[in-house]
Image (cartoon, rainbow, N blue to C red; front, top):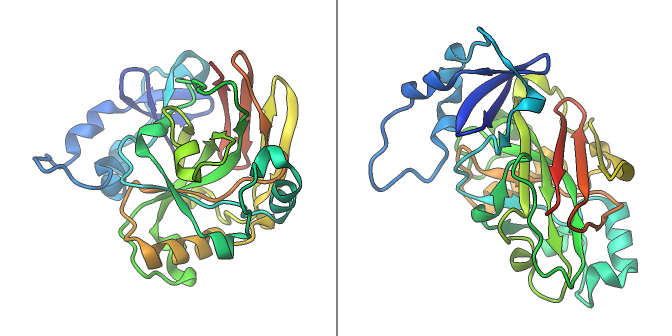
Length: 280
């Protein structure tokens, strides 16, 4: 199943290039009071909600709706740096990427957090800041956690996944810490929809690609991940309790490069689809 959020916070099911409005299903979510839950209520309730997410009636073409992030309220966005060997090699070789920072393999550098306020959907676009500096695209497979996970072993890790999206980990190059340079508003694009776990048998067997203005910039395969999705969940859950709606960005492959206002990025992941994102 492909589940999206669109237009004015509508909930949709995507089928055959059409979006079907299933917003009334949100009435089935449990009422929330203050303090609000530290997870995404929709993702937490998804197993029980699925029977209400039925594509029927008159749909709208995907091209005619504004796609928002399929996850509205992630408690955390966790990102895996340098998780492809060839990207590690290019980061070490290009001063425009490392900017004098020490670049280590993921086993040594660990993961980092992006601000949840950076999150947008593809229909909202990326608004660049500090345009006197290099701003890069980084396409990634994004994993959405479906149920609470703490100290989960890799062999059980995928049982805690709700589904998968395409992620763009937009980055300002410079000497500051990753979390600062990667967390401005709109610097985390998630979409175009959530593909539920049952539709992707092996997240380690997917092609990942991005084009900028029609030119292929990154083109790789998740089989080249240094740490697999399951291993990342195991590692992440040894530090954090993972909650429904938490997002795990699994790392970007080689070919990262700068974008500027007016550019159009088209990111795709096999089994999920593609999303078109304007740079402003």
